[in-house]
Length: 231
Image 1 (cartoon, rainbow, N blue to C red):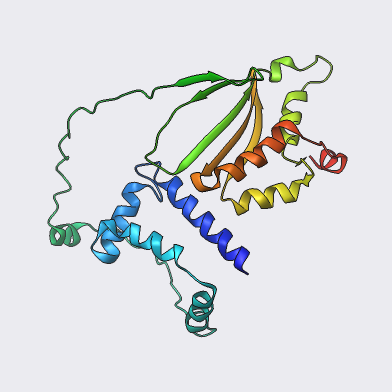
Image 2 (tube, rainbow, N blue to C red):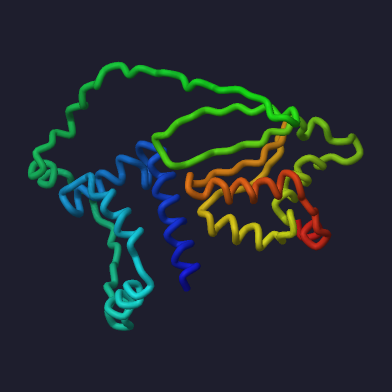
């Protein structure tokens, strides 16, 4: 459906952006550059790949599936253990793996500037601007956690935090999860020793809708009994 395709595009692009937050590892900058350098000879092709996903249509998906997802059109890969040899491959590549690479020198560190303000309701707001990536991270921190639990009711703070996204603002747990997924967002809450946090991570174009969902959890949690019993 159009809604499913829109959701898939949003989720793919958000995963792509989150990958760019790290240098190495799976889907990090180094991994992406190396991947497209091997596949296309152009490490910068990741931008074209992202654009290709943005331009996918329902008709295009249906045509692709009809052409390639056929019963007998497949490859079976068998992984057979063997000794790893670097000799000839290393010589062919022209690399000497016995020599450590040199240092690129010291890097400068500039701590981010923290902007502080206060809303009309007294809520303290701290903002750190970083426009390298189209992602926004929002935390609502509450200065009360496990240490505030009544002596005869240990676990109250942790259970409360767990229940916040199990129903809020007229939406059930599954509806909240579904709408969060549709935005490609990460929305959740947790409690720790001296505080509790509601956290939102979302792409910039989806920020307004993400904040609306976050607002339901913060301001209008419902603590439905059926979800309480399940949790």
